[in-house]
Length: 416
Image (cartoon, rainbow, N blue to C red):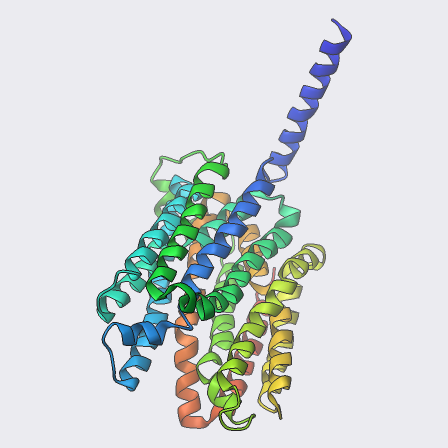
């Protein structure tokens, strides 16, 4: 055999062995490309979902609602109805992802967001806007699909880092979305902002359809999909992660409805209250962007359960400290620190679920995890508003600090 042919045969065998070893390690050879596309797509879809927050009351007024109290009420409903719809259907999309492929669900979700955003731009009254926000929650789910795809493709010893990198895209969207929504409508108009955002998400649809690769073998037996929970060897760790995600979101978002009110007590009247409120709300997302991938990498080394328990306890202390700040700069600093601590929690929750369930149930169980987190996003602001109204603003920080301690205890007591 000629020398070049021998060399080619050896190299080709080496490539096959390398690919085989990656599969044995629980990964696919193209997981890095998929991770980048998923992170970018999660960023754009999250931007689309959050960019309307700054101008939502203005758009509702433009749609014919003139009473200030009604505008505030419709704004709250329009914000929360998306998460409510997403919480209802996330387990369904996760189960369908296990059956028909995660890529298919991501392509579906991105196209659904495109349609919903475009329809929001042509809404004629506030009820149509609410319906389109509900539709966006029903048809969305790109980020949860990304979690399932990445969790089943990356090497198992790098899941924490990979999910942390993915979380960076999601948190970045939470940070950039409201900033874009703050200045873009003044440049091109509110309706045009919806159309431009739909065009941006359409690029995500194209990238997901043509760049993401998935070696998915459709399972045709109904028995494998009849009950995803029955395939889990031990359900206690999974249930603990669902509870942890719920408590995390309740504690983190219960502060947002009262942020401006709390800041008005810390600064002089009419002293840039809305600007400081934006900085306080964005501070948590900014800290999470900085820390998510680093904490995920740390969790891969020292253990995901340890990071979850320690992070929940530190977050409880930071929440308690926020009740005793004397100026707004202290509050901004504490919210950034809280974001640094919480940045690795969602990736760690996803990593624990991935290690605790068989591959054919990953999408369904991550869907339940997403549903629990969306439920926290709905309950958190409502609980915060009720507590502030009846027991004072400081009670919100005391209560949420206690919730984080409860979450840490649940994680510690259910670790393997």
